[in-house]
Length: 228
Image 1 (tube, one colour):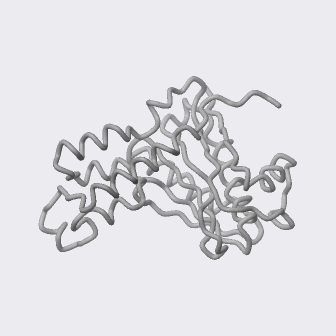
Image 2 (cartoon, rainbow, N blue to C red):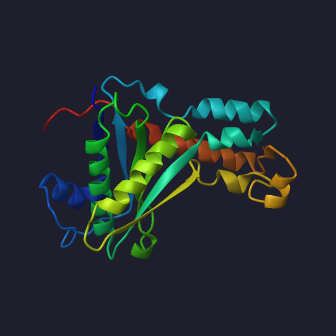
C-alpha cells in the first residue's frame, strides 16, 4: 500500500503552489507569499483521522483529572519535528520545503517497507521577517515514529539541493507554548531532583492552546479532493 501526500494549500501560498504544479526547478522569481499555514497529510488510503491526530480532548481530561498537572512522558507524546528553510525570501523558503517534502513522499510512500513514516503537519509560518524562515511542522504517533521521520528528513535535507535554500531540523513540543506553562519543566535543577509531574501554571492559557490545536484539525485532509 502506498501513502498519499495531500496538501490543503493556504491561499496566501498560491504563487508557490502554482510554481510546483508547473514543475518549476528554481525557487527564484516566484510571486510573493504571505503568512499562514498549508496543511499536509502523508497517510495510506482509508486512514481514520482519529487514529492519527492527537486526542486533544483526552489531554484536556487528563490535565483536569490531575488538578492541572501533567507528567513528562505525556508531554513527550505531543512532540513534533520542525524543519526550517532559510533563504532570502519566504517564497523561496516555502518552495524549498515543498521540494524536501515531495522528496520524502516519493522515498517513503511504501507502507510495507516503511511502516512508521505516516505523519501530518503544516507548512508555512506567521512571521513577516524572512530571516525567521518558513517551517514544516511534522506530527507523528509517538516519539519512536517521530525519531524515524526526523532521521529521514535530516538525511534528505543533506541531499536535496535547492539553490539558495538551507534546511535545519529540531525536535520541539507539539503544543509549542506547553513547556513554558509547566512549572520547573525547563529547569535542569528541578528536573534533576527526580520530579516527573509538572503543574500547569495558567489553566486558562492551557485551554486556549488546546482550542487553537482543535481549530487546526478540520484543515487536515485525509481524502484527496476531487479533480478540478
